[in-house]
Each structure stands twice: as C-alpha cells, then as structure tokens.
Image (cartoon, rainbow, N blue to C red; front, top):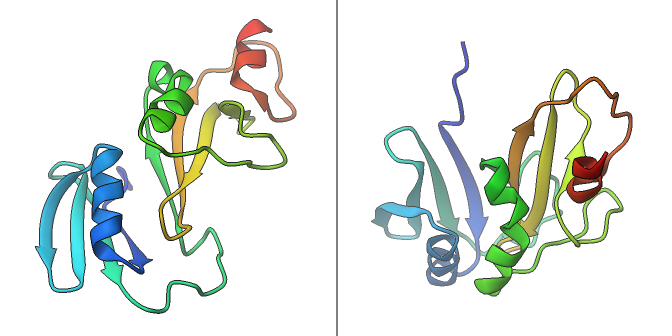
Length: 149
C-alpha cells in the first residue's frame, strides 16, 4: 500500500537561511509563500515543507523532527566529503563517531546511514538499503568495516 514518502514538515527559525541550506544539499524549490517554503524531495512525488516559527527550540525528538533521504550506495560512501564540501558536518549517531556511514542491521536487509543536522537542529539522514550476504550482522558497524568483512 505505502509506496514512499509524500511529505514531511519541519519548523525553522530563519526561513531564508533554511532555504539556502536545503538548496545546498540539492533539493529543488517547489513553492514559496509567506512564512513557508516547499521543496521537492522527489519531483512530483514527495516534498519537504519548512514553516518559519519562533517555537523551534522545543525539545527534540526524532519522531517529530527527522527526515531520511534515500540515496544510492556509491553516494553514501562519499556523503561525508560531499557534505563537508558544502560546509555541513556529519554528527555522531548511536555512539558512533562521525567518521563515515554506519550499517544498521535491520533484517532481512541492512541499511547504511549517515546523519547530519539542518541549521535548526532538525535531524537529517542519508540512507541506503544494502543486501546482507550469508554472514549475519548482529550489531552496527561502520560501512567501511562491513565492506571488508
């Protein structure tokens, strides 16, 4: 029934700053209005709504302020440098230092992911499904380690 992400909305403190950030990571502007902007995540299929508000600094919880953008395996391998080239730092996740993507052992597939934040502290993720071979993966490891095993 569910085919993908349709829309997600985030609060932002400075809409102009946030528009610049999301354009920097490659999203295409879909609509601008007073105090809000929409970007295509996948043109014609899914979008991100940014809403300017003074109530950005509410307690963070990933169920309210998190977006995962699906990427290809080759892209996630170079994501840390790609983000750095745009002045964006990756962040620690699940106790893993921000040195590169981590593999999340979700059965029957695993996912490689890397995490960063937008200017308002909203949690962003690049994620890529990966196929597990016959070796079981029971804990998270760095993608680089997973590829060597």
